[in-house]
Structure formats: C-alpha cells, structure tokens
Length: 207
Ligand code: GRF
Image: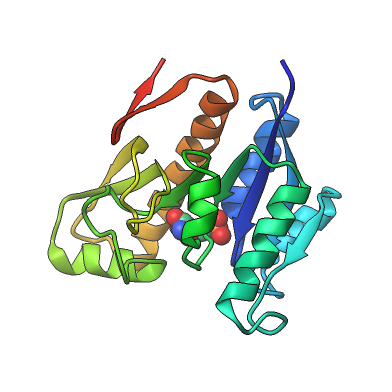
C-alpha cells in the first residue's frame, strides 16, 4: 500500500509532531510527512522537523499580515505537497472555510479535553486545563476529531480519559493529557492510513 502523504500543522513545541515522526520511523504508521507548517517562526516543532530532514514552511502573520493571504499560502503549500491528510497538532489558528471545504474529512485535530466539554471558542492550550481544575470535574482527557466549520465540532474519531485528582494542578493535568494525546493521535493517523475510518453523518465508524 502506498504511503499516506500528510501535512502536520503546528504552532509550538511539536511533541505530537514528534510522536508521529517516531511512529512513522518505527513502521507503526504507513505514511510520510510531506510538509510541516508553522504559523510561528520560532516554534520548536520546526527544529524537530529539520532534524529529520522534513520540509518546513512558515506561514505567519509577519510575512502574511492579512488572514486571506495566509490562507492562500497555506492552500498552496498543501496543494503543492499533494497532501492527503492534514494533522493539526497544536496549531493555534482557525482553518479557513475554503480549506475545510477542499479537505473535507481530511483534516484532523487533537484537542486536550473530552469534547464537547471544555471545547469551542477560547478553549485552547493551558486555558482548557485551568478550566478543568476550576470546574471540579473528576475526569478529562483528549479527543481526536475531524475538522469542520464549527470550532471543535467535527466528527469524533477517538477519545481517551484520565482522572483528575484533588492534588492535580494545571501542569500535572497537562502532562497526563499530553501523554494520552501521544497515544491517540498516532493511532488515529494509523487507522486513517489503513482506510479504517469512515465518517457517517457526524459520527465515525472504526472498521
Ligand atoms: C496539545 O495539548 C494539543 O492538544 C493542543 O496543543 C498542544 C500541542 O502540544 N492543541 P505539542 O506542540 O504537540 O507539544
């Protein structure tokens, strides 16, 4: 079977990118990362990509101050790389509708909570875990989902939960959640690369 061509979009550390790179190298995922795109020029994930000789592109506000120009560039980068799957791995920018339309059910995102809890507009990064602690919930986790026009609203591919203990703080929750992100994101990419994921309405069937 030919390798699935993927693009990974990042804004920061890129630990999720790293797990995908590692799992491809181990042979767990039959895919190749055609390009890593960052909207921050200093994202550490870019260094991770360069270390593995993966092509990188920076599509940031400095070079493209207008949102429409960033979208156009992003569309061009994805098109030129013949990407079949776009993985948002900590990419802190809303994807334009035209890109979502072109890549329908071909864009996935990792979100650090059990959607629909602690998700939607304004729920990103550490904020999510802060709100989790404040709310007093006993369970949180991570979700891999397809991206549609509703923020964090696309079909859910996979979720995994962790316990929130009384002694937990934002940092410890973030660490626990990140660990499970590193499990479920590569697994979702693997299942997609094997054609085992089917979208039925707003639900996902794992074959
Ligand atoms: C993760 O918590 C992810 O869920 C969120 O941003 C973070 C990215 O982490 N969307 P990293 O850059 O992959 O280390």
